[in-house]
Image (tube, rainbow, N blue to C red; front, side, top):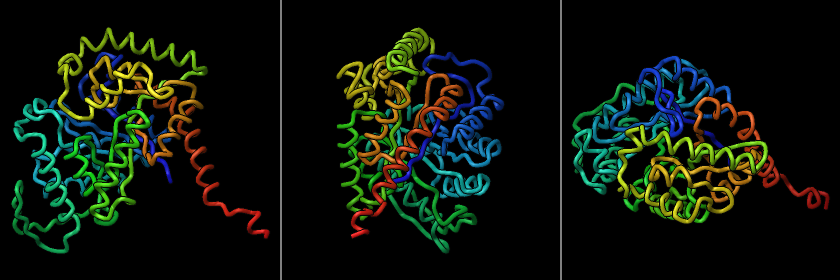
Length: 372
């Protein structure tokens, strides 16, 4: 199995430990983030989405203009743009990025977050809409002529797109969500199903559930899996845990001044955050080095669990997830540019080399049998 690394882009320097500084849209910073990830050997960067975020399509277009090979994973929330228009927007951006685009469909797990943009469907209705949205998007990309669609959420008559994705009739679809409704839609549509950083047992459980959902559409062997984590690296394990403790102390002082974190509910609605909080309740460290400190502090605001240790120890931890079927790792740190560069120097090459070696050993013929 091949391996993919995804980083995180932003138009402003900010994290749990860094109070936002500079303009909200800082082109020079965004360009620096993108180029740092490309230099570090990442395959893609995520362009995230929220009810208060800048426009992701324009951010993705700028990243494409600032890089040569770096892929882009654009988060898109159905419900605010017609699927036929979204399909054409994505296909157009795929051309301008020379085929480097993938889309991450986020349906929304929190009612309050959705209502800020005027969406009052309930949780399961949102996933029903995402299912239909992707049906229409894919038909827009693949139809050889005009088509009609009559569904619960969308009615289309005579659509005939003038632009298709650059390579084939498809932009890779990533999909997130841990609820049963989300897993059903992922099983039908996702090229890559995205998880947050849970324990090995939890990840194995979710992968089995998603594969079972995909099997209904004869896709069990086609869907791939992504895991999001926050590696904390140092020369020794002792130094790595000291670094994690310092990050947590700094974040504890910082997040109270950040409305995104301070305004979060004590009991988040989305299943993914609930699962992370359940992991955090098991202790500061789960398995051998899955660190839950930031997840507990922020009430599981996004991908907030980490792996702490030396580069070799974190590599070995990632390989355990790879053995479960994870082939994409979304990794980001707390000092966005410097951590991305550190991952490129110390972690990504180690993981790629280990997986290449294991894959070669699996595929190589047994020399003793050949000799016999």
